[in-house]
Length: 338
Image (tube, rainbow, N blue to C red; front, side):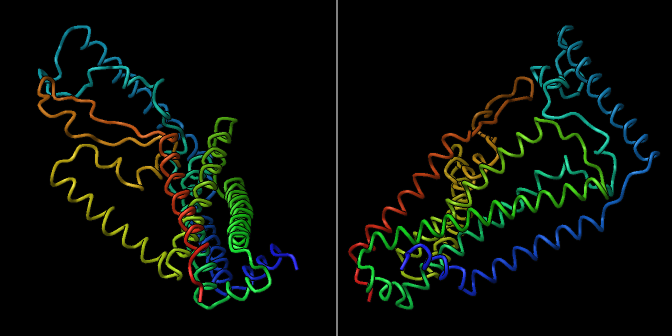
């Protein structure tokens, strides 16, 4: 009997997995229906007005930049006029901005695929991360609690092989489902943008950026699935993973963050797992360091931000996931399963 095929059948037959798939499809359908109902094709007058407003906004940005340069050349301090300008006027340069105002910004009630695709993809990734964590925890937790693993080991008495096959089958299934769901999801909203909204500027840069977010999101889904699987293996029950996740969120993300802020710890955000998740998913995350600007009263401006980049963030996520997985395999190898 093929072990992988048996695990696929066991996974697909679980009612909880089927329920989560139904909830995924339902969330997808509700989001698409809501978007479709709240959007319309812009008229020629709406497009003309939106383009004019976007042009005016870009001109205003350029005028502000030139005003900053003029005052800087004249040696006028921002404190002398009460106006706010940064020390480095290049921060106001429209060319250096992440994005400039476009017509879609001034079209309320019109769905723009180019603008909304990334937030919509974040929403789907968040749901898939939850899906992977819960399915991973319940898949092994239910087997350990019900004695299904013991029955499986009667005809395949190799613990590590059985556990590795379970984890590999789980990750492969979740990955296939996540890829299929995300492609159908984005294709649906692309059609909505083409037929009942605005497609927007869909150049090579847009698709590369969206593909990068999609790829990082899939990695995050797999890591969450492995973490749920590992914690449930260590705790021998699905509730162990749920309890660990809830405890971490309450004790560390909320409680410890509050304590660190009270004691005025430096850069507490870099100690939070959520910060590293955000940095990995976006490629970079910026946070405010209050201590960096303490005592700076020269011109009222201070660049107090620091960044977490995707590389160190990925290392942190891999270390946590790898550590939990190795611990789960080590405990499963020696523990009494009855």
